[in-house]
View 1: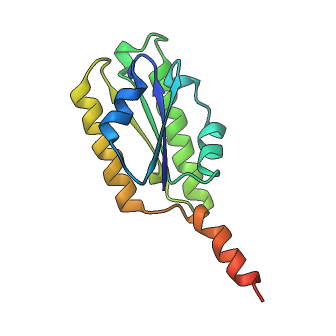
View 2: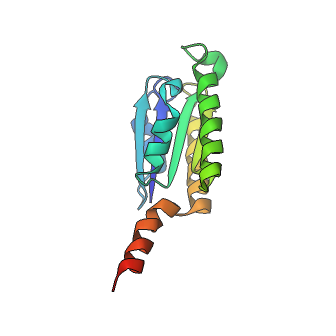
View 3: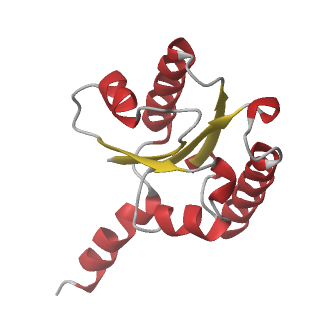
Length: 141
């Protein structure tokens, strides 16, 4: 299984710290730094899920602490639209999630990592990951 975390560089100054909190695992855990969570577009989140990745998570700053003043607000709106779209096409909206943390709050990051772990366990593998395998079985002679 695989998780991709898009992390605001202000909220998560050290992406390696998230990987350390995740620890060794059979799950591939990738952290992709972003200048601001508002820089993510809906198509990027959807494209990442289609690779297929089992869970996409966005970590951003609290709105009052965002250096781009409206960045966290925009990210929230984009996440809501992405979830709505996933529901419309029959994928679980829970496959994308967002956490808001105060920059430098290591305890909050540890909590986010546990939330990610719990969500991944609850959802299991992406149905998109299973689709090619099922198609191959159907077309086998």
